Image (tube, rainbow, N blue to C red; front, top):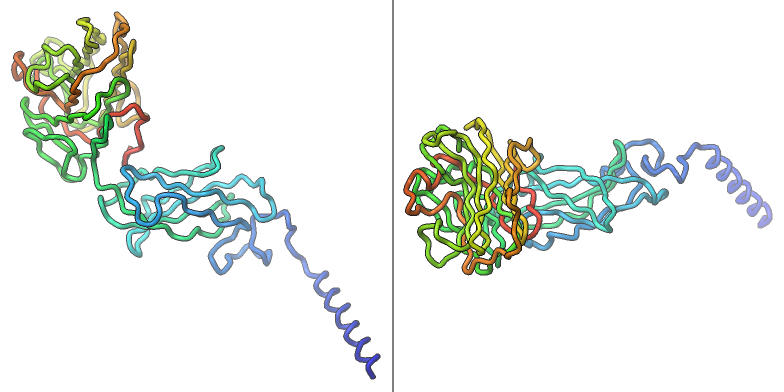
Length: 368
C-alpha cells in the first residue's frame, strides 16, 4: 500500500514538471517585460524587470536653495548592463505636477540627478519619486520623498540667487514694481536693486533674464546692471572697482547699442566694443558678465542661456593682471544714479528675473 502511494506521488511530480516545461516563459535575459511574460503591468504598475531607485536628496522635508532631485540608480534584474533612463515625478499633495515630470539619461556618475524647469509654488511641501525606464517599459517607483520648495532668493557669502518671480527680492529694492509671475520692473531712471555681498566675488559671473528693456526707452548711456566698490552708494563713475553693462536708449546717437566697461582697481578702463541691435520688448534676453583676473566678457542671448548669441565681446585691451577685489562689493540691477544724471543711470522699463552671481555654474531656473 505504501509502495503504490509512493509511485502515484512520483508520477504526479513527473506530470507537473512536464506541464511546467511545456509552457512558454520569457528568457531570463529579457528584462523588458513582467515576470509572467505577458508584458502587462505588475501589481505596482511596472512593466520592466528592474530594481527601484532610492531617493537621495532632497528627503525628509529638506528645503534646498535651488531644486535638484538626486537618486541612486536602478539595474535590470536579469541584464545589469541595460541602458536605463530615469523618470522623475513631483506631486503637491495628491496632485501630480505634470509640468515637473521629466526623464533624464543616467550619465556616468553613481547617482542620477534631475533639475526640473517647471515653476513650483515657493515655500510649500511637495513629494517626489523616480523610476527606471527602458524603451516603453517602466520599472517600480521609488518610495516617495518629501521636500519643501525653495523659499526664494538669498545672498550667501559671495553668491546671489534671486528668482524675483515670487514678489520679493534678496536685495534692496528702490523704485521697483513686482509683477506677478514675471519679476521685478525697474520703473524709472532711479530704480534699482542693490545686493551687498558680505564677501567680495573676485571671479565668477553676474547673470539675469530681462524683458521689456529696449532702445525705445528714454536714455543715453543707460545701464542694465552694474557693480561697484562701497561703502559709498552713489556715483559709480569714480570707484576704483566698477563695471557697467549698457543698453543705450533713444537719446543716444546709435540707440540699441550694447557696451560695457570694467575697471579692475588698476585705473585702466577696459571696454567691450559697441554693437547696435534692435531689441524686441516682448522677448526675454539673457545677460551675463563673466570676469576673473585677466578676463572680462559680456554675453547677451535671445530667450535664455541657450538662446542665439547677439553679443559676445571681451575688451580690446585685454583683462590686465590686477584681481577684481572691491571691498565692500555691491552689485546692482540697473545702477544707482551718479553725477552723469538720469539718462546715464538705469534704463527704465526692464523686468528682471532669475538673477545669479557666483563663482559656481549658474543653476537651471524654472522656465529656462
